[in-house]
Amino acid sequence: MSPSNPFSHLDDSGQARMVDVSEKPVTRRVAEASCQVRMSPETVSKLGEMPKGDAYTVARLAGIQGAKKAGELVPLAHPLGLDQVEVEIVPNDRGVSIRARVIVTARTGAELEAMASCSVAALALYDMVKAVERDAVITDLRLDAKSGGRSGEFRRPG
Image (tube, rainbow, N blue to C red; front, side, top):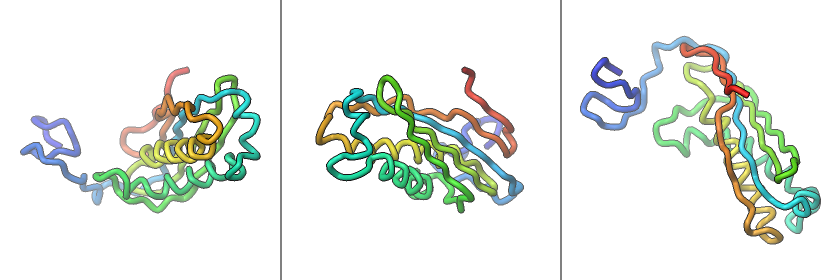
């Protein structure tokens, strides 16, 4: 990154590149993300006993796997050895909320891993419910908080 190029993933000629993080210190980093899966209350009430099985368990495991695979799915992301991934799926009045928390000790943050975790958990949940509710909607994927690293703390207001 240079003063004439504020984008870390572009070189001075505008070509995409993987950022060199070798000079950055290894620190503990935590990232939290969330998304929503909108579906009817009737479908939510059946999530523990869907035709394909327990949708909560499948989605939680898919979310963990999604965090592990973020470095493969996002072309310029660094593959990270994750220390912990937590995925929580909570029913609400419009469907379910999915939250992921990822901890890593590394030179770069875990924001993509937390968001990939939520995304893949939501996709797995959709796959589990599509037989009974094809119009379920995945929405509101976002980074909620991060800590560690040079840029420090971030917490989404509200």
